[in-house]
Length: 334
Image 1 (cartoon, one colour):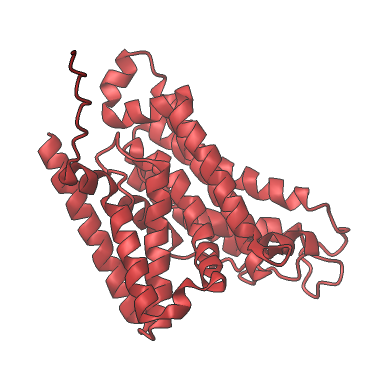
Image 2: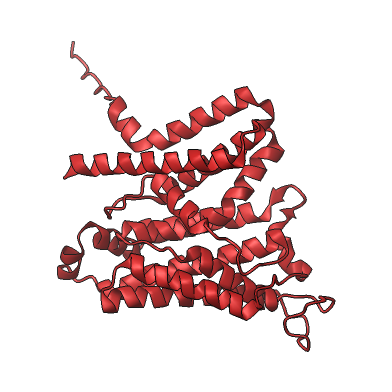
C-alpha cells in the first residue's frame, strides 16, 4: 500500500501580513471602533459621504503615487486644481450668471470646460516635470514654484473672486447617479482602475519603479529618464485637473483660493498607504486605503463631536507616524 504524499503546509507569517497589509488592518479596526461608538457611521448615507469626501484629494493622491514612487514630490496639485477649476468654471457658466466671466460667450458643451481643466492641469504638470528633468533642480523647489505661480495665476484670472452659476451638465458631476451613487465616487473608482493598469501593466509603470529604485541603473538599462519624468508629472497634473472638475461639480463654484492644503492631504494619503519617499515602493491600492483612513478618521471624529482643530492635530500625528514607519522599513531594507 503506497503512502500518499502529504500536502505542503501553508506557512502564515503574521509579521509579513502586518508589514504588507498593516494599513488595511488599521482601517478595519477604525471602522469597527467607530461603528461601535457611533452606529450611524455604517449607514449607507454616511458611507457614500465618506467616499465622496475622499474622491477629490484621493484622485490627486493617485497622481502623487506615481510621483513619490519615482522619488519625487509635487507640492503644486492644490494650486493647479484651483487654476484649472477657475478656468473650467469660467467656460462652464450659464447665460443667467450675474458675474459671467465671458459675457458674450454662449453656453458651451460640458466637454469644453472638462477638456480645459485637464489641459491646464497636464500643462502645469508637464512644466514641473520638464524643469526637474532638464535643469536637475529638486522636485521640491520646482513644484513649490509651480504652486506659487499657479495660485497667483488663479487669482489674476478670476480677479480674486469665485466663479459660480455653472451649467447643470457640469454640476451633475458632483451629484448622484439615479439619486443613489455619488458621481464623484464613480469617477474616483474609474481613475483608480486606470492608474492601476498604468502602474502595473505598462512599460511606463515599470519605468516609474525603476527611476525611483535607482535612477542611474534605470538610465543604464535604457530608460529615457527625462521623458518619463515629464510624463509622471504630466499625469499628476492631469489628475489635479480632473479633481478640479469634480470639485466644481460638487461645490457649484470655484474660488481661486480653493483646495489650499489639499496637496498635503493627498501626500499624506499616499504616505499612509505605504508609498515610500525613498522611491521605488508603492501601490495604487495603498493610496486608496490611505485616503480612506484620513476620510474615515475625519468623518468619525466629526460624528463624535471632536473639534476640527483637534482633528488636524490627529491627522498630523498620523502622518508623522507613517513616515517614521516608512523610514524604519527602509533602514531594515538597506
